[in-house]
Image (cartoon, rainbow over all chains, first blue to last red; front, side, top):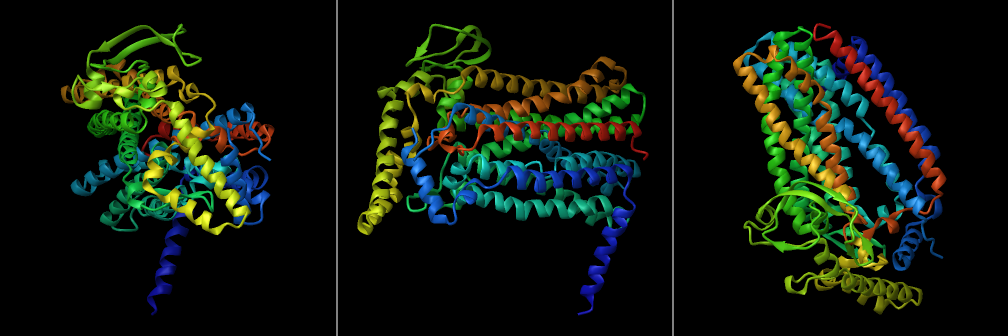
Length: 75
Length: 518
């Protein structure tokens, strides 16, 4: 019963110590990772990569009808 | 109302996807290869207890970490592009593409990323064996990640294990094992991960050579060259072996691509493998399309027939046979495939009309037809041909396929020679004195990247005009969005990835110059 909090504490300590004692390159790549994730998930995803079908239609049926039309009439 | 995409939109969407995939592939193979090399070095350390191996392991692990961190999540952008730029395709493939990608995300990526923390933070905190297991799990996790992505890609090359549902306009997976053990997936996976192992070995060998040129870290460099030499030689032999079986698989699943990368126009028995050749403008025509032909070539007689059919008398179909048909060899002309695809498309139109008229009996009947094996085999498998204008539009870019294939193969044999020389000079104990060879090793770091990218160019461009082989051409798959927004994101990606690449290279160079003592 009491082992879970101890385990969680040990895991937390493991990561905490790891990040604290990180070398110069580790710190630098973490900064790059965070900037990259911000660009990918906030800028690119929100402003440039909206899901085309989700934006255009409200439900799955409308999406399937639309794609069906494309498949039938594509030439 | 149906929008017909303009060529600019299709071309820019393709260029954008190609740019993203090419950049993504600069990071992936080094992760695949270096993770195994690090695991091998750490295994030697745990077995022998020699501190020098621990020092080596930690040094190469640092370079692995830099590459892993910079490359992580660059593949996510490809998934964004599926939803935005290739939404009709994404809808059409349904759960077949989604399932392997989801497994990759949940299983392999978490396995990899969880144990990466133990790899880097766990030295002196967990016991040696647990640390070693974590390192191996990262290596295996990286390859498992690649497996699921390649399974999804292989389905595009050879769609199997699914049934098309006209109600949802999606393909539905009916046989998971057929998708997983798709013959293209198996050969593609083995070929791709072994090419990653080779690239990792070349990277280690090249940097070790630099240390020897600088007259630094002699011990680390020669030990690393030994590991890289053995692992690299085995990997390059595996690359050639799996490349051969991969080509055999392509000859069955994508014969036009196979004929294109050999620039074989007229099928024949006793077909020779082109060892080297130059293609130039010619008068040769297939349908209305003028194609390039050889101005010069060196052939290995009978070898292409032997590769594909097991004997030199085996018939290898050429592009002419595959486009215009060859009744004697049972090859359908593209015109007939277009007719059959049209039958499937007309039936889909009937379904739509039946749904509009609430004719549930007809709808049920048509759904059953789409699930019928004979209909799938005779008509639905050619569904994409209904969207093809002219038979010759089914011919990919022959010079591109030919040159990318031959450059890749030439480099494959070059790597075998190079790793043999590494081992030979190491065993003679003279490698540090052969400065010319060390320079070659250093500059050869770039070549596996070239070979790997050529492999992807061949796989993707050689499949044109299809996004899903025979089922969907790229022109049908692309979302009708403004080409201006695609150009904008293309430029954004070019800038973002270039910055990431510069960051990776500069951090790596700094760490390599610092050396393993840091």
